[in-house]
Length: 496
Image (cartoon, rainbow, N blue to C red; front, side):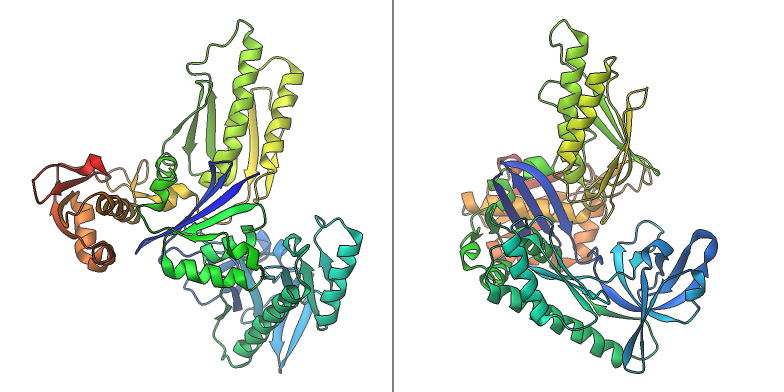
């Protein structure tokens, strides 16, 4: 399977698109105000223990207590008198107010819920994962060759200190021994820094390890031999990725490219796909369609036959639409990062074998997903219930803000996504014309945001040699822009 990774950065956002066989399958957005905390490690303080819900709440020093379920408390590690004291968790009695323990964020905070924590610490590297307090050596099950497994185990055993565990990742197969050893040494260095930070810390909760940025973690975890190219439109990010990849695979570094002409996402037709991510309706090739809705409790997906007529045998027609929908739903779950409880209303089928075929096809498609999923069988009403692991917010919440008119019943494009839209337009405009001044009409909400944050588009104007005069225009909707040429006073919005 051919895969490509595209990384685009503006002053307010970092966007990553992953294509498989020229089809968009994963899309990530990160802003300075919305950086994921998953993987961050804290030396935290127990605030209170709620035995009734089998959980403890911990102060991790970010203003919102973290939630540690008892099921995520395998062992409790505290740093006492210059050494680690590790105890296997056996119940609520093992926690007490003021106790200090090492925890890691498992899931980001969501709505009014604090981040979800675990005591099962793991520090990922390119080829190896370090697991403190687990005195083990693990090899990925996907590495089948016995000789390679044995060799990798020898490498890990030679460098592994007591009380620490090492898990060799799949990507380590076939890599140079020196690269794997270097990765292990870097992980051990990171662990040493964590210990020093805790040792020199007073009694306040503190962050002792910060996970890598979204783009760095994508390169670390997904940039493998099956990736044809990584294309970046920010020169600093391009050089950083290229240097990072050179350290462990010089051949892969030759697949990292810098994009300098026009919009990266526009050139590779990614923008046309990301613009669809806020739409409720998703069309199927057959003429059928999906309707994707979000409620407070769950996501609901409805499958409709739409314009599809097919042949005279109704059951075959329905099976064809349902199978096509199953493939597309699996892609949309990854693409939109839909998680939590999901209910899918497939079109009813009478034949038992067809129903089994549908569920089997859907489960096969879900194996492409890196998130953990759990899928039920079809109910008698054609409903399929499933859950998908939530790690970060759905793309819907990253691309849109709460509407001030309806207070959350609908969505409007976020200010960050509108700034990105302006940046993309300017890149394409300057690629095709020598004009250096335009007038931009925007909705009052966006106008006020730009006026209060003057730096957000200053870099865009400086980089592309263009002067933009911003005009407040109440006739425009929040998601609309109108560019006017200063030279001939014509509306040039639709041209680029």
